[in-house]
Length: 383
Image 1 (cartoon, rainbow, N blue to C red):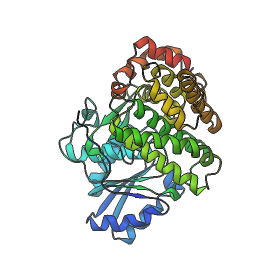
Image 2: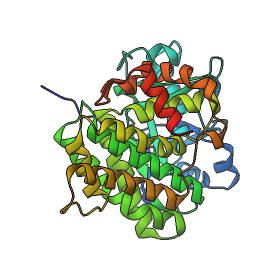
Image 3: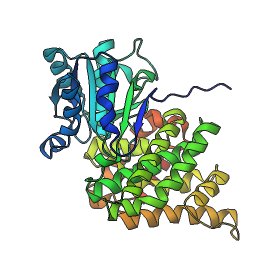
Image 4: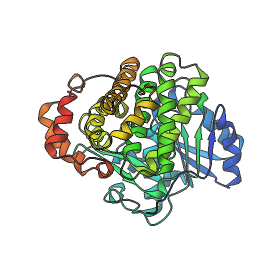
């Protein structure tokens, strides 16, 4: 069986990598960028690291800073309007997954027309490459700076849906760990657990390949060994660098192997309750892992080893549970081991969310197929 592997043709990695971006853009003769970001990153002055590079190389820009934590269809529409009004010829996202996902939607629709929802009823539905997209990443979690995924919220019907399109791949991605040093503890924790979930789900995906497996296992190793340090000491450059590489490797894995029920269920929690995506993943991951381990036990033994568990004297069942417990313990240490009920999730919404989760594209590659009631029970176990 053949497979296809997507990733950016150029990625600038490491401390102060952004200082190389201006020259890269100038060489491509791009003239004016629509910068897609959020108000906080503008207010704290972090976006200046990007605009200084653009100005130094004679590249114009306009800033759309209205992106929400769960980016909406309206964010894309507003960004498209500014893109046209300002005469921008390319898009730069600056931030975490929310900024990247909104920017992807803007760039794709700008080139292909229609509505972003038109590209959600299948995979790789666009006919033309999106407007040139550059992604500057400030979190070590979503890997949206390099994947073929975007997650969009329809506020009208409380749904959150993935769009999967090969044309989302940016022409340049930037992962500069210096931009991540100031990340607050909770954001570091939530995005880090998001990255761990990407790696675990990609490793057990029915679309996994040797390339995605290698990326996923190395990502689990890096994240499990460095997330707690990055949360407790954001100034630790070694931990920040390791997390940056871990989240990127996890992105390489899931962008090409896809995901599973953790993400399809987390999307619904974001759509209905506007909850933090990485936090939802952290809460759901142990229970979904127990569900999936029934059909992929060897994979979860590998995951346990990557989490640092010594499985030599354990039975397969003991190793699986020890690996899941290692995930739980990491989540507890970084503050994401919470309960859905404490976040306002109600029993009466579980069936609605469960049905939408089964309809979510991420469910297609989960290794074990669930019934509606089984998805409800996983939600219920996390309340």
